[in-house]
Length: 255
Image: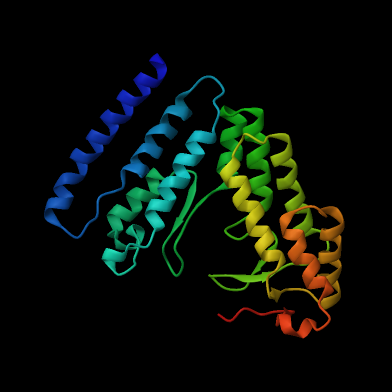
């Protein structure tokens, strides 16, 4: 409790100091939005973790970073559906990038604020628990870059889904395994990754040929016969007129 109190006091001092530093800039240019408190909280917590001499559960700091990312990229109705990240001037944007350590931050062509798994793998090795190390290793395997390993990037915004008999199924299996072994850890993120793959299993833009696609769906039904998504996959396999699905094989995403 005492450690938590000290941390809260430290964070409060940091937030006040940051606010004092940005007041002149805001007063001189009213169009500069404030850096969200969620970003300040994340930066503060990350500094505390990096100073720690003992292992720390990294799940809370990861959640803080995801919350800050959500705030930065949310489209706001009162500003013509643009996000805070887009409205920042260059100085504020660069400061935000610096504060969001461990996250990819981009607003050119495509808006991205996503965790950098390579950073968190290293952090987990130095400061985290065994569960942290396993979780971020899986995240790194899933996201070797901005796009997931089972998506072939074809533009800044998207790509086709890889059905090669291994990539999609293996990635799904790793997340299922983590959920089974550590059901109380990183619940929201694990469920999000599983849901993404389940959505992509039923995607229409497929990188590979028709045979590979149907074979992978059959393999999925065999491996995961009792999941809710399996019913939809089975229905697709059982359709007599598959042309109604409007599937695109060897798909190329328009730039």
